[in-house]
Length: 158
Image (cartoon, rainbow, N blue to C red):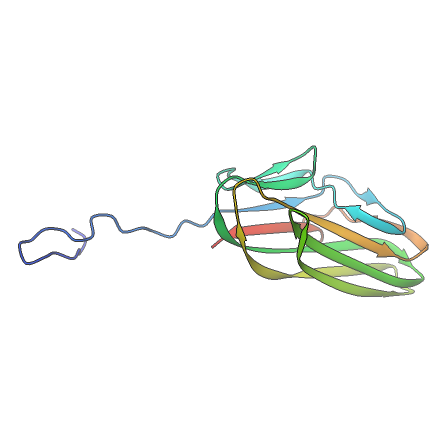
């Protein structure tokens, strides 16, 4: 039998010990997303989730928060076909507010990797979490790569 705390009369003091239950979601692109100079919502269409705390809305490309929680958010955006001089700025939003971002310079290279650092956020039911990319170069033939290990948005309940 498991060891439990008892009072002096033998009554169990802690009949329910809450256990840590990790939940999360990772969303990715199904297809390469064409972009040009401007700001784009990353059109996530695939998800790996149990849909208990988070669910991808494939029509808005945003993650819906289904239960209040504290979570760790992070992501990455990989652009193929970059060119010229400019920048890629990846940003993760909760509702309309930027939570974390990363700016990477484009200097005549074929690709730009924008790793967005992790941040702990307090999420509420109904919040929407999503990623935008600001591509600021008029050169190249840029596309957001669809590979799951290069372009993704991750939320982990902690």
